[in-house]
Length: 247
Ligand code: HPA
Image (cartoon, rainbow, N blue to C red; front, side, top):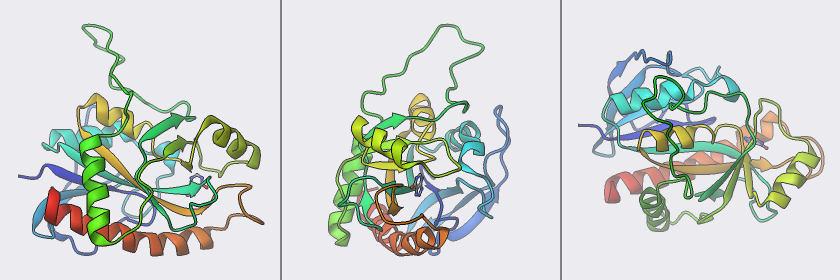
């Protein structure tokens, strides 16, 4: 029985140590997920894996079918989701490739299919989203990071931007005034949809670059890719610990 899924973001389109047992193409009432769900054994435990941007990393953040992705996982009996997200660091001390386990979200995205509760309703439904991430999973990730010797920021506010372009310096200034510590393009509506489906969902955020206006010059994909490579090593250590010890 597989009840744990990993959603991989930019930099994690496959999990090296995952011994793949099967792949399953899913169709949902919301359309196609980003790819087939991969099922296999990772560090001695059954897990499912789904790369958010597709196996070829071709689906941009605003085009990801977040509804289908989460629905497909739920349909397969998944109860807990660890999502890996690349982000820009807004706070000066979030030097790439820092890792953050965020505890809050501010949503700046627009025009995304962001809820399952909009048609065929028997009554209007408002989910509680005071604490947008599953605190039990967050605690497990923090504990695992400690055991793995990976330094992480134990909290932080994730500003979800629309993308696919990066932000302007003024947008980052505004996000900082709002209280955001990191900025990424995929954190929403993924977290809210997970909550609507009652999934225990938490994020490992990898800072790939200093956010716009927080460094000299432009932000290059080369820098992002280099930092993500280094960041994913830390992510793998955390995943190994969390899967072998606490999950
Ligand atoms: N902004 C938004 N999303 C990101 C960034 C960024 O600077 N870096 C990686 N994902």
